[in-house]
Image 1 (cartoon, one colour):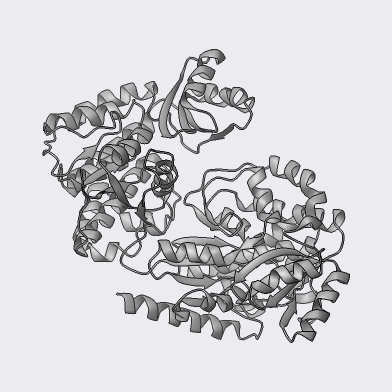
Image 2 (image 1 turned 45 degrees about the vertical axis):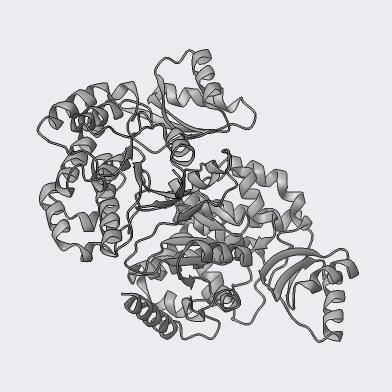
Length: 626
C-alpha cells in the first residue's frame, strides 16, 4: 500500500473504569434504552456511578466496556470522522471491531458479550498474571522447567510483556520461577477466571451453542483476528468459529501490531474506548520495527463529546495550615475523604492530620515537618478529588507533580488508599530522620541562567523545570543564601519554598535503600488507566520500586510533560487540585489558552466561593464545546 493507512483499535477488559462514557449516554438515548432492556439494568448507572461495585465483575464489565466502546465509535461517525482502513480489538474489543465493520448490529453485540461474560464468570476459577522483562520463549521454557502443567500463554502483548493464565494455585506458584530471573517482574491480575486458557474449553462449547442462533455479515472493513493476527475472511461462518475459539486461545496482539505496521503500512491509529493502553503499546512497539523511525501518529482516546479534563496533583510546597478549612467545615465529601485519610494516619503515626492542619496551628506558621506535610498534602489532594467527583466533575487523565504522583497511583488503582498513605508517611519519616536539612528555591528567570547559577554555586541541584522562565533549585541553607544574595544583586525574582528537606536531589540519596525496602512491602496493581508522570515525562501504567524511587529522586519536568499532553490531547481543561493553585498559575506560560487552567482553592480563603467560581468556569468550557 502506497498511502498511509489508518487503524482503529478497541480496548478489552481491564480498561473499564467508573465514570467512563459519561458524556456519551445522553447523545444516544435509543441505544441506551436498548441496552437497558437487554441487560435488565441501567448501563449508564453501572458505567458512571457503579453504586454496587459491579463494574469489575466479568459478567458486568464485558457488556459495559463493549457498550462504551460502541458509543465512542458511533460518536466518531456522528462527528463525520473518516473511518479507518483496518479495525482490531484486544480480546473483548474484537467484538467492537466486528461491530464497527458491520458484521452485526449493536443489539446483537450486547447480547453476545452479555452471554460471553456470564459464561466466563461461571468457568472454573483460575488466575492470570502479567510477566514483564522476559521473552515469550523464556516464559515457555520456564513453564516447562517448573513442572506446572496447567498454565497457558493468554496474551502476547509486547516482546517482553506476556500474560499467563491457568489454575490459580499454579499461577501463584509460578511467581517464584519468574522472580528468580534478573530484571523480570510478575504481576498477578485482578481477575476471577483463567481467560484465554484451556480452562475456558467448556465455556467455549456453551458459547458455540448460543451463537448458533445468530447470523453474521461479512466485514465491510478488514478486521484482524486475535487468534491469527490476520484479517477475517469474507465468509460469515468464520466469525462464529473464531469467536468461539478465541475464548480458550492466545491473543496475538503483538503480531497484530506488527502486521498492521509492516504489512498494511498503518501509520495512524486511534484507540476507540476508555484508556490509552493500546496506544502506549503501539507507540512503544513500532519504534522497534524496520522503518520504525518514520512518522507514526496516534490519537489519544477520550470521550469526544466534551473536552478532556486533566486532574493535576501538586506536591509539597502547595501546603499550609488551614488549607481548605471552609471545605472541611461545610463540604461533606471533602470532610469525609480527609477524615478517611486522617484515620489511616492516626493508626500509622499516632497523630491527627485534621488536628494539625485545622486546629493546632495558625495559617501563618511554618509548616515543614515532612512526617506531617507529606500525608497532609496527599490527604488534601485526595479529598479535593472526591469533592469534585461529588459535584459531577471527573477526570479523563491525571498528572502527578512530585509527591502528587502518589495521588495518581490511587486514582488509577495502582495502589489502594491505605498503602499509599503508608508510603507517604513512611517516606516523610525517612527523609526527616536520615537526611540533612536543606531547602528549595523557585527562581523566576530564563533557563539560560541555570547553568550560570550551577557553575557559580556548585552545590546547588536542579529539582524542577516548571516553564521556560521558572525553575527550582535544591541546596543547603548556606548555599541557598548565597544564591539569594546573587539573585538580589541581579534583581531576579525568587521564592523560598516551605520545605525542610532537599527533594529531587542528592540530599535524599541516603534514604534510597530504606525507601526501596519500604516499596518492596507494597502490592502494586496494573493501572486502570495510565497517568502522566512529571518524573518520567511519559504515561505510566505500571510501577515498581525503582520507578517509585525515581518519582522522589529525579527532577520534576512539568514543562516537558505539559507540552507532551498538549501534543496528544486536543484542548484539555486542567484543574489544579492543590491548596495553592500553583500549577494552574504556571500553566499560562505553557498553553495558548489560559482559560483552560483552573484552580480549586487558594491561600486567600473563601473556599466555597472559589470552588463555585471554578465549577462555573468548568461548566462554561463544556457548554462552549457542546
